[in-house]
Amino acid sequence: MTAAAATARLPFDAVPAARAVGRPQAQSLLRLRSIGKRFGDKVVLDGIDLEVGAGQFLAVIGKSGCGKSTLLRLLAGLDEPTSGTLEIDGGRQSQGGARIMFQEPRLLPWARVAANVAVGLTGIDKGAPARQRALAMLSEVGLEDRAADWPSILSGGQKQRVALARALVGQPRILALDEPLGALDALTRIEMHRLLERIWLKQRFTAVLVTHDVAEAVALADRVIVIDRGRITLDLAVPLPRPRRHGSAELAALEGKILDQLFGRAGN
Amino acid sequence: MKRLASGIGLAGIGWLLPAAIIAGWEAAARAGLIGSNVLPAPSAVAEAFWRLLLSGELVWNIGVSAVRALAGFAIGGSIGFALGLANGVSALSRGLTDTTLQMIRNIPHLALIPLVILWFGIDEEAKLFLVALGVFFPIYVNTLLGIQGVDPHLVEMGRIYGMSRRDLFMRVILPGALPSIFVGLRYALGIMWLTLIVAETISASSGLGYMAMQAREFLLIDVVVLSILIYALLGKLADSLARLLERLSLKWHPAFQSA
Image (tube, rainbow over all chains, first blue to last red; front, side, top):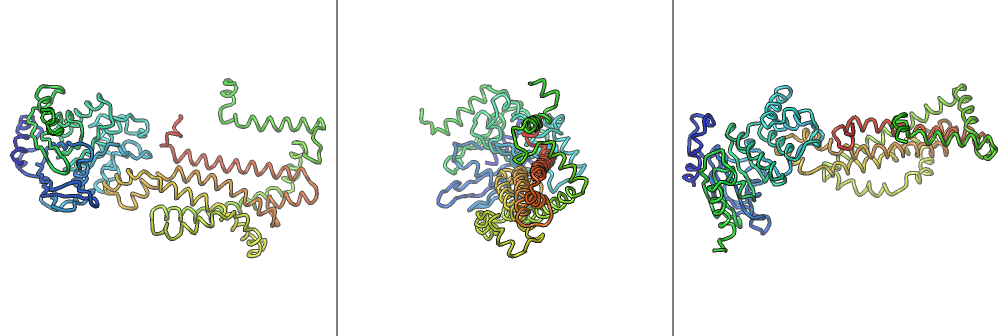
């Protein structure tokens, strides 16, 4: 698995200036050992082993109810596993290094856009410096001119960009994304892919994206895992150079492979 | 009609109907269609207003009533608000008190007047008690409802971002409950006047309700009508104040962003 992660990372060495110098190559930021999670009698996750390298972009795919959102909530520290160990950066989990982005933007309607972004600095920074950082992050997502607006007048895509700015303003080590683009229209979604990729290349956080959109997964991730009935059934590196072109033949081939796995190659 | 509305301003348009009613009323009274022992003409009411204003009686009675209303409101409102908050955030507190409060809520508070007179006589405490009790429930129920209605997704978001309990309350829960709290506030203001007037007409030696009852004894129908008009104006004033507060503190709400 670590080998797969390493191959996935190789192409990005070519990306100029995107890489912090001296960061060890094979370092795992997230280490899951036979993680299980059950709610009452229902087993949702069953023996998940997973290592995610620092700075990796991992996509988790599965049909609805397969346990992928549960996995994400464990990674973000929102839930505790029933069995197994989950380590973030060598230590026990539940440090403040993880941020999660949901399908809904979850902005505070009574706070202006800049103040909403500053929520991401709770306990990190406050007052004028927090505002400065919030504004800088807003311009990163291209919304610097909306800082003084109420969230209610923004479009769906703009709201998600504010939510992204809020998640990233505290410079988390891990960003967990729970189908954050699922409610957006197709064109806005492609725009968001580009934005997300650009910021990820710049900040180099570890990204875990849960999605049911296979095209989205292969367009964004270094590595895709498929979860079925609580287990990892496919672990695939996506060693394609960036920026990736939507609809290219290599992406389509990978997409086909993943879809085959998801639907049990019933057609063959 | 559109031009008329824009000429007077939308704020003024609400006063067109009351003005028309008063004009029609005056005309009907002068033509002898309404007997002066049934309903005096507006000019007669205005005369009574002037007379009472000059004697100082009117200002004194309005002042007495306003102090009672506001004191009762402050007592009942703050207890209701505090309990609403406590029961909104703590399941233990809700479990302990909510059933009792819901039972008391179903007793019409004006039904307690005989009991209250036995307890307090016709002193100030009786009126304060009734107003406070009347105001308590709309504030309590709507504060509780507002807090329970706060989007749990937002609360979870606040937790994930490491907000302390205090932060979570001040930045997420309270602002989220505010629209509902304002609904309670406006209801409570209406009940405040209603309770006070009833209490004053039954047992008082000063205040607007007392003034109206005295006037009835001496068949001063113009003063009775004047008192009723003053209730209407005071009620409207209280409601406008609440609306102004609402507009100032709910600027973020889409319903208040017409400008």
